[in-house]
Length: 356
Ligand code: KG4
Ligand code: ZN
Image (cartoon, rainbow, N blue to C red; front, side, top):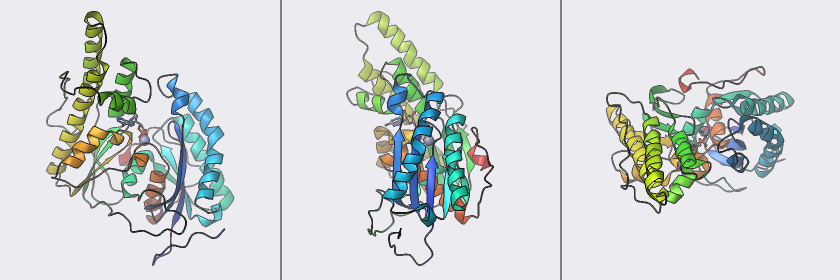
């Protein structure tokens, strides 16, 4: 198959990427680390909703069903064959072991069959590199300017279902972890509070939706500032919501779910934004990145984009939650850096970003 023509002085690098760390099976083809030729995500959210969270065995079984068809369709959408890509990037961790294994085995199979190099990518590094991607995917034959790349040094807020971290990035592939949550991740708090309010799973989008009809000042939930550290804590606020729900169930006819959701969301957003701006000031960052599933949150986006102190990059909604395009972007920079992994690499379910 003839790959679509592109304008570029240096040889074009194309990476096929695979992601299966949690409950999304995804594949993508990325060109030069920034252009998306195709990106598909098969979400299992509906499948897990009945359990109120991700059921690991169900997730890995579903990944097995979906992974090869999604890779196939992604290549077709990009108008490419496996022989047209330069490398195969795959999420190696952190994530659910049984889910990661499916993606890494598929990627190993493709690498073995094609002779293309295999590149294991850290899922959090993937979220960070989602900020480099141009969106939406390019149509065949389409040419367009890249959106401006982030400028170093950067302060990055990673907010997802499993992680809430503040990272300092001086240059490509260099990470210094400044702080992290001491207990629940921000997304996890959204999910747990949604369960408490009987709103379903995943919690972030449902809380955001119902909060639109609520008053964010109705309840003054605690903000854990943890002064003198760059860490977060979200278990206190979750407990405060629980206490309030118990109290209201005894005294009120109907739970004011809208006000509870809006007040909870406002407290989480206050801390995430306030703390990130403090860190950016303190470390003299040039720009800020906000990435990960919770960066899809509307009030969080508005708060970051509404301030004028720092330019802020937040990926488009499709690239906030798990996807393979971000793994392809990170895989591209790792490929340029010379990373080539052996075909016997194993998954790393607890792989910290600082050990990549
Ligand atoms: O990055 P992600 O897709 O998976 C992980 O790597 O964890 O993040 C999923 C998390 C879930 O906890 C979900 O509730 C949260 O992101 N999330 C949101 C929103 N959309 C997804 N949280 C708040 N507001 C949203 N709109
Ligand atoms: Zn993620």
